[in-house]
Length: 114
Image (cartoon, rainbow, N blue to C red; front, side):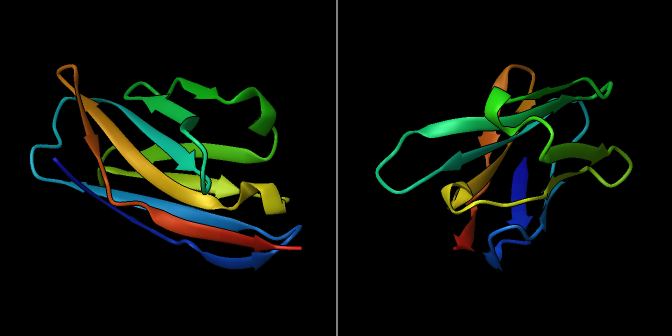
């Protein structure tokens, strides 16, 4: 499974961005997609996950601002980010789980200016 994330960039505080992650290769039986982020000098943290059936999970601090969705037909997962804050600045990584194995994309940088 290969994952290609896109949609990052520079945005002012209060703005919105939509990240996309397209999966290719053996995408059948991907059971879960996820978005994670890593700020400079910090560990990688879970942002949101979504199962094949559409069940979602979010980091508590991000509920209400971020929304994860997926298009199973296109093997693509999205992350809609609203009301962005400078502390949301990070590299955002897309992940996929298939038969218990984790796959990671290269990440896309999101920078939120104050």
